[in-house]
Amino acid sequence: MSSTAPNGTTAHSPWERLHVGSDYMSGHLGNGLLCASATWATWATWAAVRIRSVIVIGCISLSVSTEALPAQSVFFEDTTVASGAQFFHKPNGLAIPGFQDWMPAGLAVGDFNNDGWQDIFWASGGTDPDHLYINDGDGTFTDAAADWGVAVVHAACGACAGDYNDDGWLDIYVTSFGNGSNNQGQVGKNRLYRNNGNGTFTEVAAEAGVNVTGVTISSGYGCAFGDYDIDGDLDLAVTAWFASAHGNRLFRNDGDGTFTDVTGSAIDFGSTWGFQSSFADMDGDGWPELLIAADFGTSRYFRNDTNGSFTNFTIESGTGLDQNGMGQCVGDFNQDGLLDWYVTSIFTDAQQPGLGEGNKLYMNQSGHQYVETAVASGVADGGWGWGAVAVDMNNDTWPDIVEVNGRPSATEFSGEQEYVWINQGDDTFLEAALDGGMTFQAEGKACSYLDYDRDGAMDIAITFNNATNKLYRNVTLGGTWIHLSFDTQNNPLIAPNGMGAVARVRIGEKSLVGTVDSGPNFLGTSEICAHFGLGTARVIDTLTITWPRGYVTELTGVAVNQHLVIVSPTKYDLDGNGSIGASDLSLLLGAWGDLGTSGDRKADGNNDGVVNSADLAALLGAWGGR
Image (cartoon, rainbow, N blue to C red; front, side, top):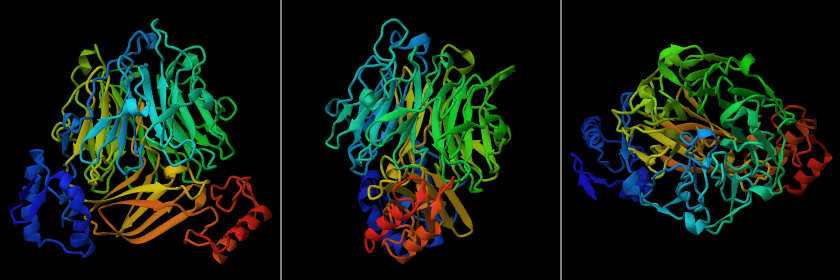
């Protein structure tokens, strides 16, 4: 369908827009042509009215306004039914231990068939098979779980996506309580679906060594992939809610399709009631920390010691103040270039000792030091909080927070709304979920971001325990944007899909930073990307990607409003200029010797911790290549 705007131009339907988008960018942005201010004001007013009634106009997200929208503006359309990605989550209480059946409901976002469109794996709870919704590229999804071999009936809990064997195809890890009937769960039933690259998965968890987390009690909850030892393959951190089960696990990827459990030797989880793990380089040294959102005051901040191990730095860092940590997200909320940490918890109207203070927002002061500001920032009250993501919903350059919540059989939380906190750019947030159309109220669990229609506005997928899932399409009239994904197949020392990379965008006097971490939240992960809202910017002055191991790619004069795939430098292209020559040799010689704790390890081509004659010979052998 299409309609006519007040100035006579044609406004395409959202799916027509996808096809005309590149031409529109070339004609209206690439050449710097903008509507006259009076015409634009008329157009923007008309568009805002249309969007408020959830009728989307074409190409509007590809235009540049002379003024940004009010920071509180964000609008959603519930496309769950129309997209075909709808199911009812129904947990199998007898298969889930300890009457926890009201907590699980996971999902994992990823482009599982490499067609450029984001797909969604949804855990169904154990009564029905899990679902794999493959994106059809026209606003709809097809449930292909049976064809792909993942339509399994089991008490699935959490999920995460990552290319663990670096073959170019995203795999899925799923924590599971199995199919027991005694309310105890079954040990060793976690699943690892290896993507075969042909529209099927093979379950290989036992073969890979990651099927067991808790030994005495089935206890797996959230999970996350990340390359903590920066050797180029994805490691796996899995959380467990029962502290007595000792089921929190760190699995080191051995690079041959198997993992080694290094819990106890590389990390001591102690008595941690873990809900969700996440890897993120919080101090900018190139080595990702491990962050654990955990219940009963046991959230953990593990500093990466750069030698394959972690130190519990929770107290020293000023974190771990959340009384009932459940979900989490990471983002640079105040644009100071440092990653901050948001942890969801429980907020009660009547505060009680050890309960009810709500969410915590840990603002990074550098050097692993944080100041907690949730109350002052206006994001403490998220009800009985679960999943949360940090993402710029209105493309105004400031990352916002979307949080879901819910607690059955609790009057205070009955019918409580979900939360969308819009960043005001002054260290405060304004809540806007109901006004923006996110009105469904149930037991929200996982909450993940993705641009499923590729229009540059980030959408939200939510799992609800014992209720219908939701897919909210973002129809906000926002600013310009850039959406980055990463191809690392030409360098085995950089983690797949750029996991762990840091993207920096400079537009005028403003600098933005984002990390590629797949957005772990609570029992779920998001699209593996770096998305930046750019406000009124017409061009990106400088786009810099700092890859794991210190490789750098820098682009200048980058066009806005595009999905851009950035290819990593090859192993011996140390300066990232696309060819191997004298400057790469100079960088290698400058790094000669033992690298110690340095995160800049690109000159160490054989990953033995030392730059020496073996690396020199390999670089010379690649001389003149790319």
